[in-house]
Image 1 (cartoon, one colour):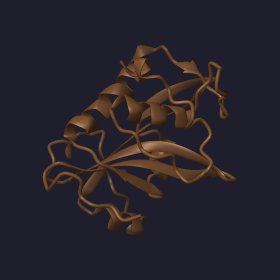
Image 2: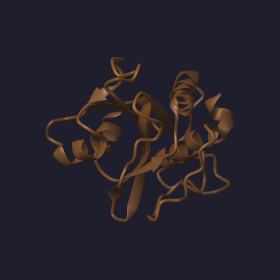
Image 3: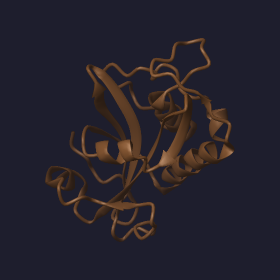
Image 4: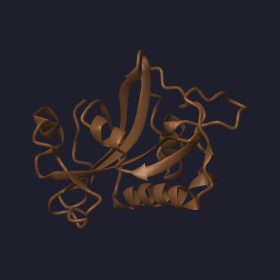
Length: 173
Protein backbone atom coordinates (compact mmCIF):
# COMPACT_ATOMS: atom_id res chain seq x y z
CA UNK A 1 0.00 0.00 0.00
CA UNK A 2 1.30 3.46 -0.87
CA UNK A 3 2.02 5.76 2.07
CA UNK A 4 1.78 9.50 1.94
CA UNK A 5 3.10 12.12 4.31
CA UNK A 6 0.22 12.84 6.64
CA UNK A 7 0.86 16.30 8.07
CA UNK A 8 3.87 17.91 6.42
CA UNK A 9 7.63 17.87 6.63
CA UNK A 10 8.07 18.45 10.36
CA UNK A 11 5.24 16.37 11.85
CA UNK A 12 4.51 12.74 12.42
CA UNK A 13 5.20 11.15 9.05
CA UNK A 14 2.87 8.22 9.42
CA UNK A 15 0.76 6.54 12.02
CA UNK A 16 0.23 3.05 10.71
CA UNK A 17 -2.02 0.24 11.72
CA UNK A 18 -0.06 -2.94 11.02
CA UNK A 19 -1.57 -6.33 10.33
CA UNK A 20 0.66 -9.26 9.56
CA UNK A 21 -0.10 -12.92 9.09
CA UNK A 22 0.73 -14.67 12.35
CA UNK A 23 -0.81 -18.08 11.85
CA UNK A 24 -2.56 -19.47 8.82
CA UNK A 25 -5.18 -16.90 7.75
CA UNK A 26 -5.13 -15.20 11.15
CA UNK A 27 -3.81 -11.69 11.59
CA UNK A 28 -1.81 -9.95 14.33
CA UNK A 29 -2.19 -6.17 14.73
CA UNK A 30 -0.11 -3.41 16.27
CA UNK A 31 0.44 0.30 15.68
CA UNK A 32 3.60 2.05 14.48
CA UNK A 33 4.35 5.77 14.53
CA UNK A 34 6.99 7.05 12.11
CA UNK A 35 8.89 10.33 12.43
CA UNK A 36 11.32 12.05 10.08
CA UNK A 37 14.77 13.20 11.22
CA UNK A 38 13.52 16.79 11.63
CA UNK A 39 10.76 15.80 14.06
CA UNK A 40 11.05 16.72 17.74
CA UNK A 41 10.73 13.05 18.75
CA UNK A 42 13.42 11.74 16.39
CA UNK A 43 16.11 11.64 19.09
CA UNK A 44 13.89 10.06 21.75
CA UNK A 45 15.40 6.69 22.70
CA UNK A 46 12.06 4.91 22.19
CA UNK A 47 12.13 5.63 18.45
CA UNK A 48 14.04 2.99 16.49
CA UNK A 49 16.14 3.56 13.36
CA UNK A 50 15.23 1.53 10.29
CA UNK A 51 17.25 -1.65 9.85
CA UNK A 52 19.63 -1.85 6.90
CA UNK A 53 18.39 -5.35 6.14
CA UNK A 54 14.95 -4.05 5.13
CA UNK A 55 15.52 -2.01 1.93
CA UNK A 56 11.91 -2.38 0.72
CA UNK A 57 10.66 -1.14 4.11
CA UNK A 58 13.03 1.84 3.98
CA UNK A 59 11.68 2.71 0.55
CA UNK A 60 8.13 2.80 1.97
CA UNK A 61 8.82 4.98 5.01
CA UNK A 62 12.06 6.78 4.14
CA UNK A 63 15.63 6.12 5.18
CA UNK A 64 15.64 9.18 7.46
CA UNK A 65 12.76 7.93 9.58
CA UNK A 66 12.54 6.24 12.96
CA UNK A 67 9.56 4.41 14.38
CA UNK A 68 7.93 3.39 17.63
CA UNK A 69 5.53 0.48 17.96
CA UNK A 70 2.53 0.24 20.29
CA UNK A 71 1.10 -3.16 20.99
CA UNK A 72 0.09 -5.75 23.55
CA UNK A 73 0.19 -9.48 23.94
CA UNK A 74 -0.03 -12.48 26.21
CA UNK A 75 2.02 -12.42 29.40
CA UNK A 76 0.96 -15.14 31.84
CA UNK A 77 -2.59 -15.11 30.43
CA UNK A 78 -2.99 -11.31 30.73
CA UNK A 79 -3.01 -8.74 27.94
CA UNK A 80 0.07 -6.60 28.67
CA UNK A 81 1.13 -3.58 26.60
CA UNK A 82 4.65 -2.43 25.85
CA UNK A 83 6.37 0.06 23.59
CA UNK A 84 8.49 -1.67 20.94
CA UNK A 85 7.60 -5.24 21.83
CA UNK A 86 9.98 -7.55 19.97
CA UNK A 87 7.17 -9.13 17.91
CA UNK A 88 5.75 -5.73 16.95
CA UNK A 89 9.14 -4.31 15.93
CA UNK A 90 10.07 -7.37 13.85
CA UNK A 91 6.70 -7.38 12.08
CA UNK A 92 6.50 -3.65 11.30
CA UNK A 93 8.18 -4.12 7.92
CA UNK A 94 5.20 -6.06 6.58
CA UNK A 95 1.68 -4.91 5.70
CA UNK A 96 0.72 -1.42 6.82
CA UNK A 97 -2.37 0.72 6.55
CA UNK A 98 -1.83 4.46 6.88
CA UNK A 99 -4.11 6.41 9.16
CA UNK A 100 -4.67 10.14 9.00
CA UNK A 101 -2.86 11.38 12.07
CA UNK A 102 -1.13 14.31 13.73
CA UNK A 103 1.27 14.86 16.60
CA UNK A 104 -1.67 15.22 19.00
CA UNK A 105 -3.18 11.89 17.89
CA UNK A 106 0.23 10.20 18.12
CA UNK A 107 0.69 11.66 21.60
CA UNK A 108 -2.69 10.22 22.62
CA UNK A 109 -1.76 6.79 21.25
CA UNK A 110 1.51 6.79 23.21
CA UNK A 111 -0.08 8.23 26.36
CA UNK A 112 -2.92 5.69 26.32
CA UNK A 113 -0.54 2.77 25.73
CA UNK A 114 1.61 3.86 28.68
CA UNK A 115 -1.47 4.50 30.83
CA UNK A 116 -2.70 0.93 30.26
CA UNK A 117 0.84 -0.44 30.70
CA UNK A 118 1.43 1.31 34.01
CA UNK A 119 -2.08 0.83 35.42
CA UNK A 120 -1.38 -2.78 36.32
CA UNK A 121 -5.09 -3.45 35.66
CA UNK A 122 -4.56 -5.89 32.82
CA UNK A 123 -7.44 -7.79 31.27
CA UNK A 124 -7.40 -11.56 30.75
CA UNK A 125 -5.88 -12.72 27.45
CA UNK A 126 -7.21 -15.25 24.97
CA UNK A 127 -5.97 -15.64 21.39
CA UNK A 128 -9.59 -15.96 20.20
CA UNK A 129 -11.71 -13.74 22.50
CA UNK A 130 -15.46 -14.17 22.19
CA UNK A 131 -18.08 -11.48 22.63
CA UNK A 132 -19.47 -11.58 26.14
CA UNK A 133 -16.28 -13.11 27.58
CA UNK A 134 -13.82 -11.17 29.78
CA UNK A 135 -10.96 -11.94 27.35
CA UNK A 136 -9.11 -9.72 24.85
CA UNK A 137 -6.08 -10.07 22.55
CA UNK A 138 -3.53 -7.90 20.69
CA UNK A 139 -6.07 -7.07 18.00
CA UNK A 140 -8.58 -6.00 20.67
CA UNK A 141 -5.87 -3.77 22.11
CA UNK A 142 -4.94 -2.20 18.75
CA UNK A 143 -8.53 -1.45 17.80
CA UNK A 144 -9.44 -0.21 21.29
CA UNK A 145 -6.38 2.06 21.37
CA UNK A 146 -7.18 3.53 17.94
CA UNK A 147 -10.81 4.08 18.93
CA UNK A 148 -9.83 5.70 22.26
CA UNK A 149 -7.67 8.17 20.29
CA UNK A 150 -10.55 8.99 17.94
CA UNK A 151 -9.42 6.85 14.99
CA UNK A 152 -11.83 4.38 13.43
CA UNK A 153 -10.13 2.36 10.67
CA UNK A 154 -12.11 -0.10 8.62
CA UNK A 155 -11.72 -3.75 9.47
CA UNK A 156 -8.76 -5.19 7.59
CA UNK A 157 -9.67 -7.47 4.71
CA UNK A 158 -8.35 -10.44 6.66
CA UNK A 159 -9.46 -12.69 9.49
CA UNK A 160 -8.52 -10.61 12.55
CA UNK A 161 -9.61 -12.39 15.75
CA UNK A 162 -10.52 -9.90 18.47
CA UNK A 163 -11.12 -6.97 16.09
CA UNK A 164 -14.84 -7.10 16.79
CA UNK A 165 -14.11 -6.90 20.53
CA UNK A 166 -12.08 -3.72 21.11
CA UNK A 167 -10.61 -3.05 24.53
CA UNK A 168 -12.88 -0.39 26.12
CA UNK A 169 -11.60 3.21 26.04
CA UNK A 170 -11.87 3.33 29.85
CA UNK A 171 -8.93 0.88 30.07
CA UNK A 172 -6.62 3.49 28.48
CA UNK A 173 -7.38 6.37 30.85
